[in-house]
Image 1 (cartoon, one colour):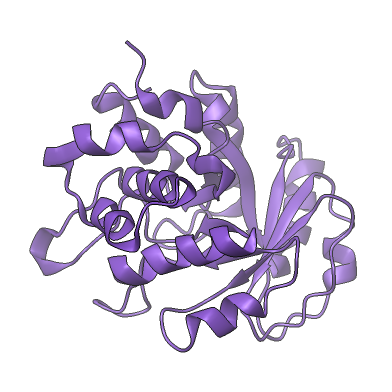
Image 2: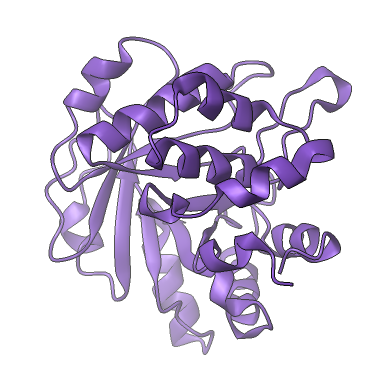
Length: 254
């Protein structure tokens, strides 16, 4: 019997191989991306994530014969101003940047994601997001123990649903299930899918938070909850597509 995940995995994973911890060279990252898309689970592979400052490297590698990703997402930063060139990128599907970055409205169907941090006034932050944009959240902070808690993530999902906003998960959701090895909590992308499914079903906040806090030993409780989750959760960035696909295959979830 197919896993309930099967229906919600289409293009789930944004390929963040250029970013920590892998920090792959551009040519290697592009080759890995092409191989993953052409592999047996290529339907799970979403856009290639690239810093705005490195798009010229993509062009150089393509000129050298490396396949251009059919879908590209661009990550901007506070001081970046070259958005006109970014918006001319072939295959561009979304852009993402911190809340204080000045990102002009993107063209066509390109989506703009605004990153929010797990502090400050959440309602105010969500209210400031323009219609048609999305929210980006990270599962890990810059230092150990600074990542978001399950209650905050639950409120993000519920708040975005109420405002008709979609969510994308940035770094820190690389494992399928929540773990707390060596005292460090790591959020799971299956947990996030289940929580998004519950939020979309308008379940109370404590149930959404409980799904985010559930360990793999209770995976059977999570899997039926993922239905409809992708209407709220657009994608999850992973540093290693190979690892994410391996972890799912090892659990017979593909």
